[in-house]
Image (cartoon, rainbow, N blue to C red; front, side, top):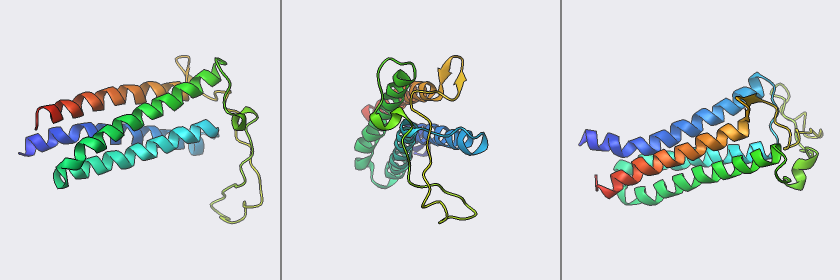
Length: 171
């Protein structure tokens, strides 16, 4: 029984781990190395937050509400695919294949700047995030958005393969 439960938890655990690592990595690049995120970077982060919640719910449903597991697993895979889609769209904007949203063109204005030493002090300031078409970091010729897309797509394939294989086996 414990062995079967561990196998059922593998797919959502992988989704939870992958999105957690990618989100924490984005925060490290932002707060540790000073790479400011653009608007589409935030969209990708929001997708990973949703994946974390869905994967955690799927893990909980594995033993508490098994009937909820399949739809939650499907939503988790769709969210991973959504993350990949946003990331690849962002990558296309960075490489000039197509234009990004108008709010991304010049970086846009955000009406809030957070200073942990003065949490309410930045409410009257505007900050200018970077333009979405300028990749601020590359590794092996690919931007963070491209790597996010690749890892999210790979994660979706692994989670779908593991998760639905177990569901089909009625484990």
